[in-house]
Image (cartoon, rainbow, N blue to C red; front, side, top):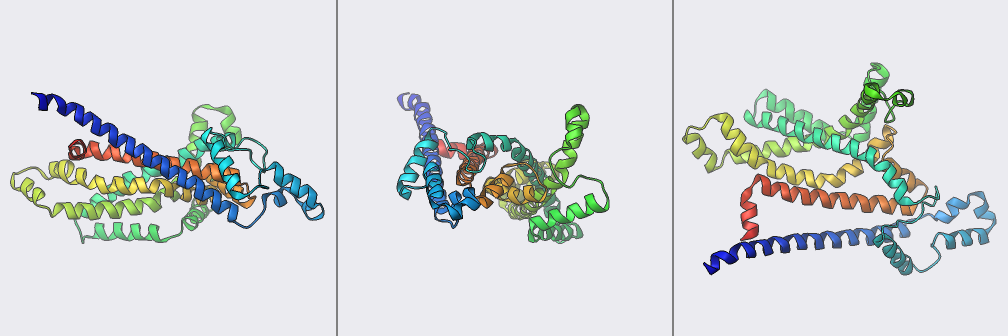
Length: 340
């Protein structure tokens, strides 16, 4: 009785330890990203003080030195790093060199647009990729399989910005079906209602397709490979021998197990989506943090760049934690192994 009564407590303690370990690793990862990003940006060529000084920078060195002191760029790099770490710990990312506004306010203004774009592309790529991968795996070597494989390889091989430009030329310039840039039409957005929603959706189509097709090709290949590998395993042959219907085998055995590698790839792509959004937001003039990072890099606005990097890293960490929870929901054996 004693051993049985202590087992739930031991299991709960194990879960707490696992969660604490994951949080500790996430904190160390975030700290490493902050330190490395800070050092790399400080070592990059270009002086923000000279850029902000403009023409006056070349004729008035004292003005540049005073500006550098105001920006906190005059001290040793290790002291700059220490001051920055203290500020970030209190959620203070400093002031934008270019806009002279709090960095956190600037970044948070752009986050909703980027989340709208990346989450839409993320869902689109997973749904379409897994669907195409399943269709391809049902009849390997068939015409359907060959067509899907060709499309997947083509979108994976083509540069993302080139796909976006081709979409603009075809659907905006030639056919005139969809808008080519921006997130909304100002005159329609001011009216509100269903017209504004439809206008926003129309502006989303090309950026979402451009970003989503690239990652769709990866999900299609991963899900196809996983399904083919799992279909050759003994428990699938046993399920067929028991007389289970093909649909039930696909739903309960094949797709359920094939989702695990798909979730792994999807979690890894969370950070890549931010990188891809920089290209897509620049091509389509989408007002998100990707475009904000591009403009900040051009103007050497280090504080804005660092804030974008840190928040992007935090998003990747959260995505990986969600993926870990999804593993345990899809495969309960992982939950039992973690509690063992």
